[in-house]
Length: 593
Image (cartoon, rainbow, N blue to C red; front, side, top):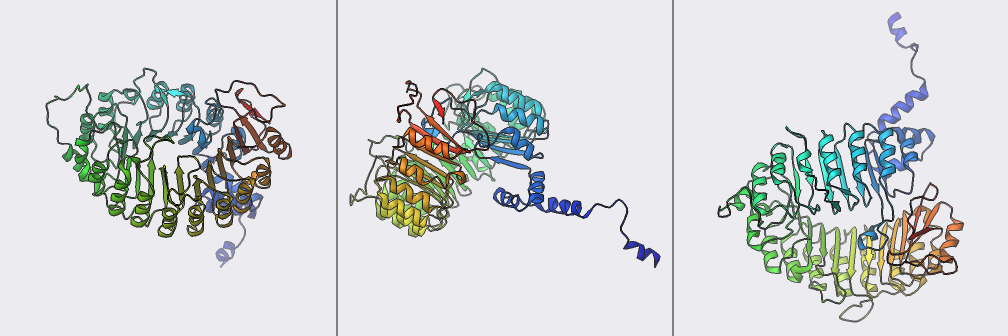
């Protein structure tokens, strides 16, 4: 009985109640993975704010200038994975100075001191050097994953540092990234013996690789599931790799054509490419085809039935060649392609791919004056045949309201709708009326829509529809559209969740800019290129909103210096929220107000 009574006595040295609650809270928050939910949790009270910071292992920085590396590492001391974005998206279209900024050096320097256990780095539109990659490789002994998307500034020497020193490396993915040829055989830098490599993507690397070293690396990487090759890998070399890695789930084929330099195989040897692909029973994602020879396309037929993702966005093939492949792809959910497949190719997609969720159609000739091979015919076919569609990016030269309205009715689950009519101010090419009703139908009928890109001849009426019905829209891109400032006011006053607003070549001026003053602190950024805003209007915004960074950019060919009295001596307005002082790495082509 004494022992039972003793069980209810407080133990000496037990944790105080507050510390117990903090421990419980930290344990619970470890299971909260969505960063939006974590952001909300951190705002509940001071103890939640502290506990959330201590348990956050993944850190997302949507703008590298919104917060300093020192502030981020002090606030979140236990980060294992970090995601950082730099330049805005329009940098991809040469609409900002190439040397604008977004340098990785301050971040990797801070992380090397704060996060010695760091395992993953994901960078998008950042500038980094070989020295940055060397510091990364030297600082993080448990480093496992590096993903670089639309990055620049480094070369094969930096890749060699990563390959040779990061011995636990599982992922090295380079996508749409410029890599300088330092005449360094980086593939040979991977350590000898079995590797833990799971994913290797270098399809964007525009220099030759040591194929013998690559073949050996693939052979001693039994966990390799994802391999994307550059155009210097021929189809004969691809055959050798497939024989050694039939376990692949994601494959970028390289050139998919013959090479003049065949070192390991007799040119006359008849290789069974069909059987090599047939042995890849787990393959679900296929891309590459950089310099495709159509006669080899039948070799991929054995894997088509199992594909969920197919990327032909580098593949210039005609409708007949494309149709011969797509008729076998009944499980396809993601499809990227060039408009060379024409409306006939899109009709074949509609007939075969009933489970399609994402479609991107890119122009092979992005010229406003060329008659495009895809039109409203292809769009309407997709809407009628692919009713599970959730995301579409569609470049074309002509469109009709009828086709867009049909898509809004047939595909109500659309989350992303990006229609890029490349000719400026193009109306409905049948009725010659503005495209207002088409885009209005999209925001009315697609209630899950979060990303929208509009183009063509649009009046303020279209923007009034967006403001009235686009309550979930977070990203809006506008090109060559609008009547007056009122159009932008409709959007800024009517879209409560708007985070990213991109506008180019539209008639919006100072009045429209001021209409969003109450919103800018809650948005990630505003980009206005070749619009009617003045320097004085931008200065007023900068004075009234001290935590908003207002940058005026000139294109590189514009050599004239800024003149205080000249209100229009700039091409781009880029505004973003920031907790820090004005950055000190802006080039001469950028003026920060």
